[in-house]
Image 1 (cartoon, rainbow, N blue to C red):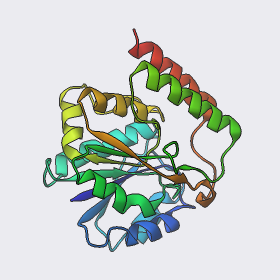
Image 2 (cartoon, rainbow, N blue to C red):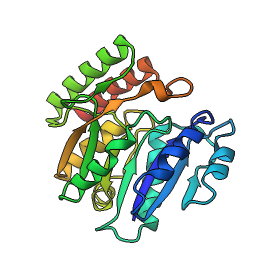
Image 3 (cartoon, rainbow, N blue to C red):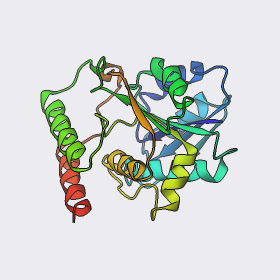
Length: 240
């Protein structure tokens, strides 16, 4: 079973495009869409249920806005509790705003089947990039990536992308050896779970991706200053 886990927060403008992309992807695979809502206050949930009514899906969440890390952890916990096979099932995570390149997903799955526990879509891998984003966001992202890769001996180039393929067996190992799969509620949650995966000796690899931010309806939910401060706090706590 393939679980496609998407954290959701006020994405009513993107739901129709998200449905169009997800409904046509991996037609020959058994899959389930898991939408983990982070307290949306618009029509996101209503639109999700309307568009995905004829698909295998679930919507999680208690209506409280806590952050993408909490939404991801809720989704991962649900998958672990409901998966068909810990050894064979996989989880695909991606953004709800359609900035992830859905076209590279079959390639990512093919690599996972070669024995990789974690496959990351990377704008920094050769052939990847941004179609449009601010200089300051690129600069801060590059600096943070360089610093954390050095300090935590991380061999991959991208640390914060949502777009990944996880083996469920890796998620189970992370849960068994930590207080929770994810404890960071902000966007730094992607770095947290990456560090935990490395500690489990996960076999991981990157594939290049173009981030298609022009496809997004509305603004990015990532707050550059707040996220930068969270990175420094994470660094101080983990290096003590």
